[in-house]
Image 1 (cartoon, rainbow, N blue to C red):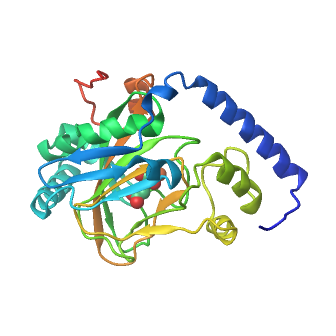
Image 2 (image 1 turned 180 degrees about the horizontal axis):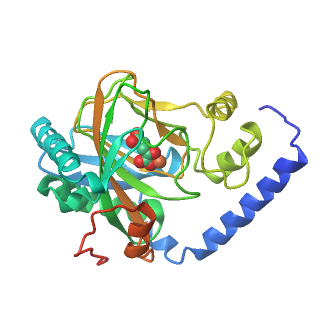
Length: 282
Ligand SMILES: O=C(O)CCC(=O)C(=O)O
Ligand SMILES: [Fe+2]
């Protein structure tokens, strides 16, 4: 184990992070009720047990063959059509993305409503959670763009997303990358000094990630076939790798504790295709 001298600046950041963590922990009223080690997934395509403990420790789980190749193809077409039909609802940056695509396509709604993910979200968030919306994303090569705009955390401590690759993803067409375990309090604290990070720093530079990797948290790159689901804690340090060739289609479900107001989230992510029947029901 390396012994390092921590500069006063980082000591203050560490203290602030520990205090935020303690406040977060004490706000989790339902924590004890939603702890589980294993979960059985059952859909038309697969019947497997997944290790919830892996989600807790590494911050992600990969589930191959969740949707068939045909289902993925249908959804790719729905995403392309929706982007063409609804330019006012399409965010056009490094990729093209529509929040609330579940309101436009039946197949996307099936993904949005998935009861397995909804169930698993509460083990990750330690609170009853709901899927506020599904993002349909289309990333194309040409300008070295990425999905999500570089290394970042979406939140601190816990947040949950379910993403499905709708096209085969290799090293070149924007695979999801993650520093396993980077959401855990010990790693979060040690990355403050090893990566020279500020308190509550959401966006992280490549050279800072390299420093964190040199200190032991090496990235995993998720290369997988269409139909593969990645369930992840988006409080980890992660990114979509910049695309160099080809294209990538994905759907991503955004889960929040039921105490988070839907209308506020719609405002935060605007433009969003609003779901008139959003259900907070357990
Ligand atoms: O699409 C990806 O590969 C990652 C995007 C991302 O950062 C997210 O969904 O939180
Ligand atoms: Fe993210």
